[in-house]
Length: 272
Image (cartoon, rainbow, N blue to C red; front, top):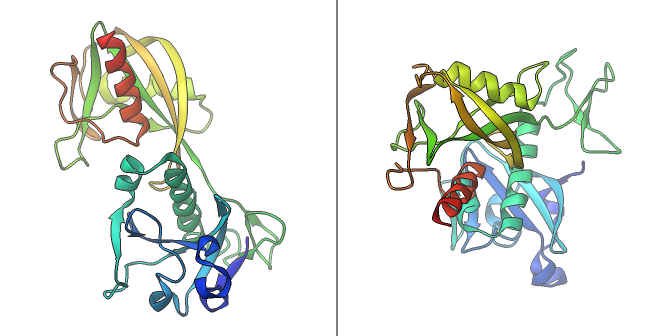
């Protein structure tokens, strides 16, 4: 896992702009963009000085580096602007979304593992893989991925949607939650639905997964059918839940999320 001082990166005039490295500059839930692309090293020349970047690999043959800050500099280069990562996932090509997802997960992990959790010594990059090592006790640390389940539950021609207390814009989404120690993903689906909305399901089917960098989840998408129970949100995480037909859908998650893709597929099936 090479770390590279910004001063060692080459600029466009040294070897041609087409292969100039791209930079994923992340702060909070935002990333810097230059038009419809991630900025190059030259675009960010004025604000990279003194920073150490993480080598992320290549995208379309172009080297990519990542850097995280608590906040962006007040003065940004011309043409460079902050953009919500969620908006990138919603409107940019899939390969760009995947690259940003990888960058944000790794940068967040590095920021939170600067010291050994066993002996508190400062960690150093591992020499042979993507990891951190403790030079004192020898402990090794690798990027942490938290598996979570998300499920689209149908009841006839309606689906279950819930409002999370953290949603501030009136959006409703699918039931979801993290897989707990000792559980299978299927066990987690059943438990989450019973705990959060008080229902039981049947015909549970795995659909697909999606990496989700808020901060480091792997979302495992399922479909299921309502079996029994009275719908009752827990009042802690969810403050409302209901069954919605395609004609009565509330605000739903934006494109780019697995929640939206599961809902869109259900809508297509309803139309056919």
